[in-house]
Amino acid sequence: MPINILMPALSPTMEKGNLARWLKKEGDAVKSGDVIAEIETDKATMEVEAVDEGTLAKIMVPEGTADVPVNQVIAVLAGDGEDVKAAASGAGAAPAARPQPAEQKTAPASASVPTPAAVTPQPQMPAPPSGGRVFASPLARRLAKDAGIDVSRITGSGPHGRVVARDVEGAQSGKGLKAPGAAPAAMHAYVPPAGPSDQQVRALFEDGSYEVIPHDGMRRTIAQRLTQSTQTVPHFYLTMDCNIGKLLEAREEINATAPKDKDGKPAYKLSVNDFVIKALALALQRIPDANVSWTDAGMLKHRHSDVGVAVAMPGGLITPIIRKAETKSLSAISNEMKDFAKRARERKLKPFEYQGGTTAVSNLGMYGIKDFTAVINPPHATILAVGAGEERAIVKNGKIEAAHVMSVTMSCDHRAVDGALGAELIGAFKTLIENPVMMIV
Image (cartoon, rainbow, N blue to C red; front, side, top):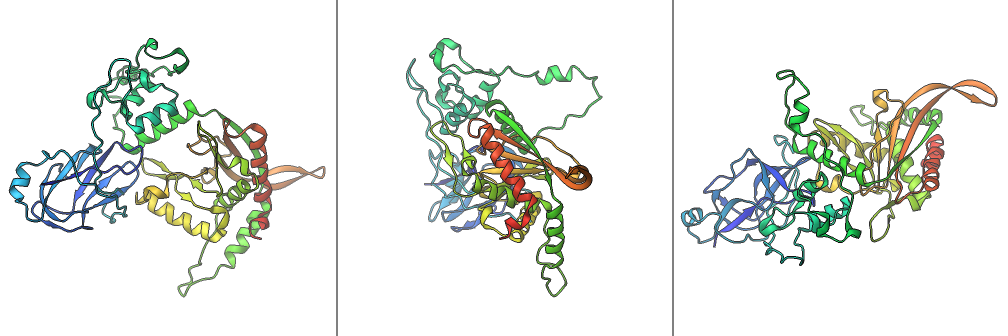
């Protein structure tokens, strides 16, 4: 029986991907482990590995095709001993695909972004009887829960009326939301009003006075996540000024004494941001009640400080994560961040390198920004916005003197981190960043 190869799901929120390139052509022999295609997601490019042996009988989705739904058949493989022509003629007719574990590998430099191999399609659920069980995908149920919407109020557009992720996204703007009488009053949730439509916005401007630039997958994902965060996470903000004079002196001395290789290249070159990452990681260890993630069932209290760091890239940003940052040296953090930043801009990060984390740092100091507030990226409960270090006049012992000062603002999820707890956390950060020797001993 022919084997269907499906569009793989690379993350819990992935619904579509772009088929960037086929590395095998019809009629080619395929062995288990062979890389057969490259698939682009919103943030990475992955290689699809075959887990079955046979002959690539038919390519169902041409390379360069965008927005291919997860679990759609993209190719058909004829097994050993099967007639290739017969498999090709019956392509797509098989009701199921062989499970293909996702093998994540970074794509070659010619690719634009990473993803794994085919997975078994979700079974279609029968239409629910009136007033009975509501059928919804696990992802749709989670998104609805995060948005505070009763899934039974959402009109499903999937097979046999199944509620899928796109239905939840529409419900957040009031689309496809059933009348309140369809669910108990206690389960009703506030749905924010929809913004102006595309046509309404364009009507405000003269034809020909603008260019329409379609959103790519990354920009859509960023928009959805930030909108969801601001609507569902109660933010509050705490700002402190930090005297980084000692930090700058320590940084200069450490960099000057860094060992060099035979070509004279130093083994590391610390940045102020490296100290910020380490200080935040240690601060979370000192104030462990703030190293948490909110869930409706209970608080997740994390043992380690996994610090995400926002990295700008063409079309948006990504947040690679320094895992167990409290255990790593400043030089290790520095080199890891340089590697992350390089691969992020090339869209070669693997999903596990930017998914999860317990907090994050967003630094706009290099742009001369004095201070700002950042949006929390769930499941984080905090994010630290870092401004530029600059010389300012301060009062010390009754006298005015110059000092290097850096303003930082911590955004907190008030469900998980109360005001006093947030103040303790940013206070611990200030102590560490102003006394960098405490991060070394």
